[in-house]
Every structure is written in structure tokens, then in C-alpha cells.
Amino acid sequence: MKRLSLLVALIIIVTVSLSEARIKTKGRGEKMNFDADSIQESFKPTFNLMSVKCIKCHTMERVVIAVQTGRAPITGQPFNKQAVKAYGIKMLRKPNSDMDKKEIRDIVVFLNYVLDENQK
Ligand code: HEC
Image 1 (cartoon, rainbow, N blue to C red):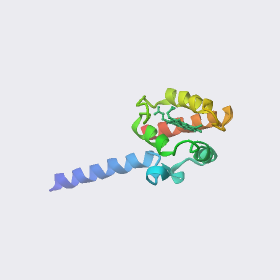
Image 2 (cartoon, rainbow, N blue to C red):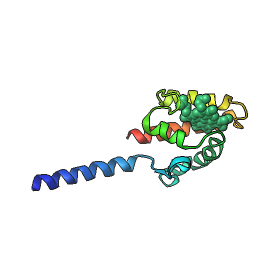
Image 3 (cartoon, rainbow, N blue to C red):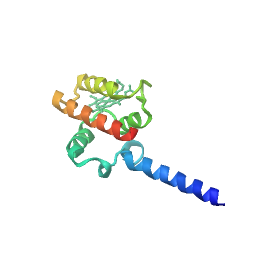
Image 4 (cartoon, helix red, strand yellow):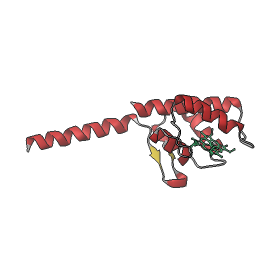
């Protein structure tokens, strides 16, 4: 019995510490996005920018899933820091992307931060 409660306590501790480090998400399907409350204050402006700029052609679900699974959902390519930069440029070059280099740079830095937080 003692062993079991110890095990349960351990599982709770591990789950709590994992969920603390991760950037939380909110909503499902089309409404899915990172949870603003779990984002560091200094990154909030970029998060807001991304939430406007990156939903022009698809929803944020695509980006959230890429970060969470480490795989880009359409092509199945790895989604790591190198890939984030490449995708940033790819999205920038799409016709009517309505973004400039500075915005993409900020969003790439932001997504690297999210990837880092999720690896803790
Ligand atoms: C002009 C339209 C457009 C905008 C704006 C746009 N995307 Fe995309 N995105 C696409 C299309 C089309 C695809 C489908 C796969 C492809 O062409 O790469 C895609 C796919 C993706 C994927 C999945 C790629 C894969 O290989 O599975 C990610 C991640 C992504 N976009 C992130 C972003 C981010 C982050 C932004 C904002 C900086 C953004 N997108 C803005 C058009 C856009």
C-alpha cells in the first residue's frame, strides 16, 4: 500500500513538473493555439503577431501540432530549430503572405523559444 501511494505521488510530481515547463495550448481544431498565459511577457507581442499573420492561409493548429509532435503535419518533416527557420522563409515566400523579413525573424525566434520550453 505504501509503495502504491509512493508511486502515485511520483507520477503526480512528474506530470506536474512536465506541464509546468511546457507552453500550454488552448482550444481545439481550428481554434487551437498556444495559451497566451503560459507565454513569457516579452514574447507576447510576437505571439499576437503570429496569431494574426499565420492564420491567413491555414489555422494555428498546424503550427501547434508541429511544435508538439516535432513533425510538420503536412510533409511529415522534422520540426526543429533549423526547420523553423526554413519554414519561416518558405511561408514568407508564398504569394500574398503579407509578411516582411523582420516579422518572420521575430516569429522564428518566438517558435525557437516555444520549442526550448517544450523540451524542458
Ligand atoms: C500565404 C499563405 C500562408 C501563410 C501566410 C502562412 N502559411 Fe504556413 N502553410 C501554407 C501552405 C500552403 C502550407 C502547406 C504546405 C506547404 O506548402 O509548405 C503551409 C504549411 C505550414 C506548416 C506545415 C509544413 C509541413 O511541411 O507540414 C507549418 C508548420 C506552417 N505552415 C507554419 C506557418 C507559420 C508559422 C506561418 C506564419 C509565420 C505561416 N505558416 C503562414 C501557407 C501559408
